[in-house]
Length: 225
Image 1 (tube, rainbow, N blue to C red):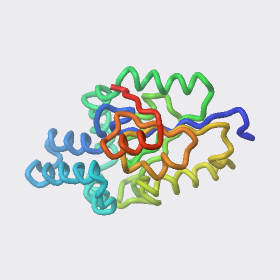
Image 2: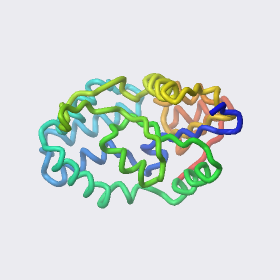
Image 3: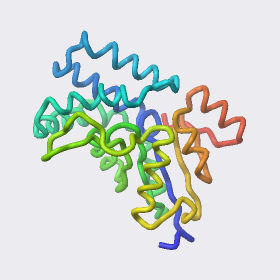
């Protein structure tokens, strides 16, 4: 592909395409069904989420918290819980405007990619629900089909999103400037590094920091709620 007539559409997931945060809600779901101890995990889950929103999250500390429980259970059991999480929680977080936005880009023939800090185990079925073929997410390490509790590759977070995107593009013999246009939709100050790299940054349901930055730089601001 020479890229002349093709556009790239990148979508953040949590609080952008989703009305809520799948990472946070997955832990809350595991607490609710009794897999994780509420007393031990809920306060930490909330604290990590607040740090994320404030732009102060220690990603390695958070991933240790988030991925370790995956290593304590068989993949078959985890898959059953994930199916239930999709049915009971995640599907209700997808808004009609979000579906319509993705469908417009798909109908236009754009290369559509969901790029998210949340791990691929949780987000792969959500990407499929949107009909988006390409997912770039934080990758949980696995061995013989079971999760180790550690992260593989660079976490898909802040500047790491740029690294993971560039690696993904290289695998397809593309560069960001291969595309006629590149658009990235995000809600979060944590995505300012990647928003600043694309031709068309769009702030979606933005936090205060991103909204101020978007207004200062005349970026479009939209809502998918």
